[in-house]
Amino acid sequence: MCGIAGTYLWPDGGPLTERLTKTLAHRGPDGAGRYEHPAGPGDVHLGHRRLSIIDLSGTGAQPMVSGGLALAYNGELYNAPELRAELEGAGVRFRGTSDTEVLLEAWRRWGTGCLPRLRGMFAFAVFDERTGELVLVRDQLGIKPLFLVRRGGGVVFASELKALAGELGGTLRVDEAALVASLLYYWVPDGRCAFREAEKLPPGSWLRFRPDGRTEQGRFYSLAEVAAEGEAAAQDSALWPDLDAIIAESTRKHLLSDVPVATFLSGGLDSSYLTALAARHRPGISAYTIGFRAEDAKFEAMPDDLRYARQVAARFGIDLHEIEIAPRVLDLLPRMAYHLDEPIGDPAAINTFLICSAAREAGVKVMLSGMGADELFAGYRKHLANLLAVRYQRLPRALRRPLASAVGRLPVATSRRGFRSVRFAKRFLSFAELPEETAFRRSYTMYDRQELLGLISPDLADTVDDVLTEHADTYHDNALSDAVNRMCLADARMFLPGLNLAYTDRSSMAASTEVRVPFVDVEVVKAAFSVPGHRKIAGRQGKAALKQAAESILPAEIVHRPKGLFSAPLRAWMSRDLAPLVGEVIEDGALVNSGFLRRDALRRLAAEDASGQEDRSKHLWHVLTLEYWYRSATEGTQ
Image 1: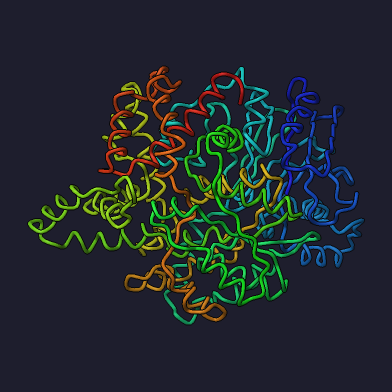
Image 2: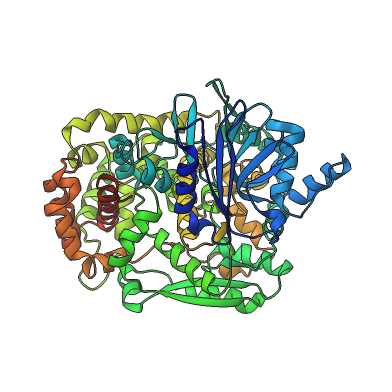
């Protein structure tokens, strides 16, 4: 894992690339490299920060230059050994053992034709000295980021938006539509960017720049097509995949490393499954788990994850490290706003950063995460809830109305504790009678249309409709007849790259640690969409097919335990650490003073949360993260 940056046909590209690369030092503290090619048909500068994982010697240094090609690459290729063997069979002679060199030679032999053959996570730039062309590439599923700004026929790019914003901040303007989208979701969708001129290279695509100023963009992977092919295969039960074998193989490949590898272990199904599989190949592997202070966990009615994590560790000989999450939240908020690049309101980013920091202090550079399993195998409560909503709609209206009214009067919390079941019931009733796409969106977003319109400047009303239409278009852009897999596809296209993969990359790299996601693997994804929806949600059990696969190695207590949340005790933080800050942001914050947010609407949110009648802690937390991001973006400190 590394950080890359560069310029192509850009004024003062050399000094700019050097500054961009310096900003990315946390992504690669083990080394720095530069490449420039000022003569000939193209003018390019490439920068690289190295986190040494495979081939720790100088032969793995970047940018890597060989035979007229220059490569700056961020990521890992898990099928590098197979590609290396194939290339060696064709006569290629390698100098070292890095996957970077494998990628460079694969590009030399197959060009963009090599991209569908790559199995891993990657974002890279490759320059051809003979043609003067620069190509930017991002992996199939958007695991690794790549931000860019185009002007004329030139481009400047970097692994993180903060590098571009810091150097081009005087010319980049905040995109208010992206901020509206972040309020809806609590993250900025992958198809948008927090600054107007900046953009993210879409997953599974490449972008070619030519010295005459022309550009060409292509796609080498389509999730919608993969899902459609999977649904066709799922019609024949004889073609249903062996999930256990496929996930076991992916886990084994993700262990490829010349440095120690550890795992996240929450004690939940996904992390326990991966940790158990990893222990087969790395006996005594380390794992890291988190816990919360007793008073915070009780307030949030959180499950006791530590008990399950300890059980898994004892059963499989895991070296377990326990971390209590009791952070100085006021200190971490501005720090995380900086590292996350865009306004992201998921407090799980703090958990990831603290776990990775602890692992890094212990000498661990690589960690495996169970991320992606919930999205691909329908493991979130929203998946089951949306199916239950269809049944709820069949109840007579005379029953539904009094039920909704009664639940609406119940508090979600008192001064002593929270009521999780009431919170879930209110959430369910907020979307249970809506049409499919609208219900799915409402089941995991922060506001409905009217609430969002009431929160922001009236001048942005059209933007709200644009954001909602974008979700509808993405949700309906498929040929699937299976309702469960329609939800999974929408999550894999929006939720995964926009939120979970984004905060995981930025939070882990802030701690100079690489996080790998074996479930977000092209072969696992292909298998996931070959599983029909009725095998993902069976009765009232989500992730049923994955649970069946995991039973081959995990005890039933772990497989079928209640689902935990990789989150944080927000209500406790709000009532204690953050209450004064919430008041300050509402009364005199930059977002309110700019007119973007309405003070009266924020006051209502805070009052509802303080009374315990509604749970607005997540809404207010995101307002705080958005405020810190907005201040840095508009004050030039990004």
